Image 1: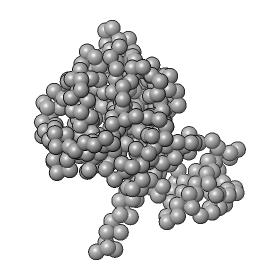
Image 2: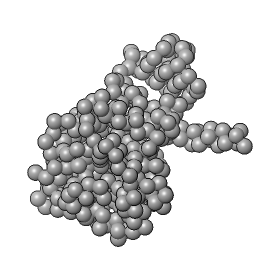
Image 3: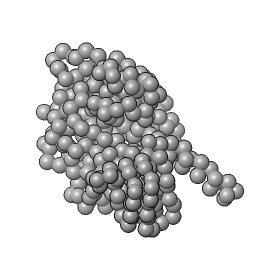
Image 4: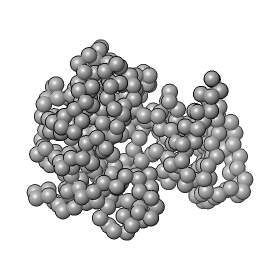
Length: 358
């Protein structure tokens, strides 16, 4: 079996988890659920599996020491690629493909965000094995997740027929990105749609060929950034000026929704995107009133809420279905189901800060 190169995406700001997640310490580097950070748990998930090679970790340059220390603490050897400017997942995947392709043009990448919770590692590895043969034949393999409800913050995939010789791999009939509530409810009822997990198996040579066809400007900027990168024993430092020429665009939009090579593995492992406070509330241990209580907090007459303090003492009284998160310099109080709107709130806060500086 051909070995797979895992690509761990550890960039991004995670603004929906403000005020805990900040630009200088994004959610993959934070202890969100239990012991360890999402980055560490993703790295540990790969340990001891023979068909994974040394990972590539895509990280922002300003986080380089935290990333290196966290990986070292869990015994993971990895090549850490530093992005001097944030450019979303398509340039990150292109850079990883170019670097992996220098060692092995026939390499297969397993591209994974590091802010996902995958509690059943065995089922996850089984799904990767199911998709590997299709990837070796040149397909771009997505991993579908069974919807647990009509979420409007996720992308959906409509599964088509199964592919000959790969009974659990389907054609992709359509992508539906972040639908409204009515559409999401329809997708869940239909049984034909799955969530797009954002995890992909990509064969390097076909992927780069397809990217050249669909967005040659993006690929060339990434080629130049890799060619002019500075390497040392600890990091591969991409060239800032050339990488900045690449558009900031997701892998889904740049390639997967525009190619005829996309296929999807049917849902086969539990998965949680830890991108919102509501998602963390669902995964946390709760008290008899469905409250997740973390840190120095006291909840009285409180129901269905996520109460967390990484700073001052927090007490709640007579509330229901709220998010209350306190850090040493900020407090968030929000309806539990308004998690997708926190990003807009952060943008407004940042705008006010810029006005104040002016």
